[in-house]
View 1: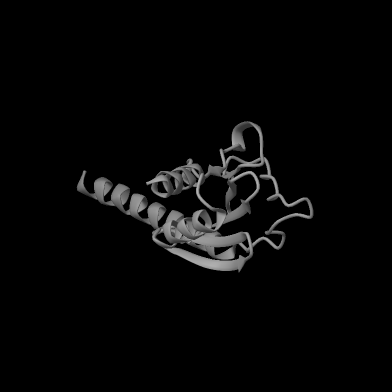
View 2: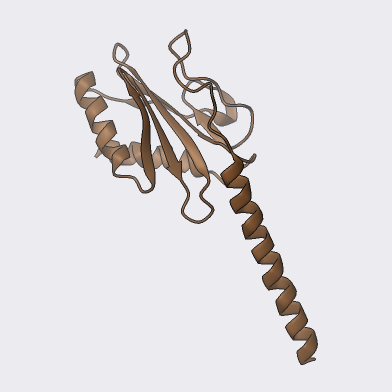
Length: 155
């Protein structure tokens, strides 16, 4: 009986280690998309149809509300940058007038998500797109991240 328990335990440990190694390898091989940034129509590109992306320009399951503000656009933009910079495991990649691109890295498997913000000063909105680089599902991480940023930004 002890031998069977030892074998079962060993199989479980080896299986978990193989799964962890596969996830790490998967996250390392995911490449940065080459088509990030505002489109010619001053929009963020739509989500690819997988459940690991949200975008304020989309409709349907991947849709998320843009950030809405009342203060001067410059103040709102500055506040957004402060809120995002305070998030864990975030790195600013691109900053240009009215556009920001950040990379968020997960704690354990080192998955990278690309998060973009686009300022619409006239309509007093900040559009957002958050997408995983790897896989099909993110278990709602991108939506939860944007909603957490929204909650902190409103404070």
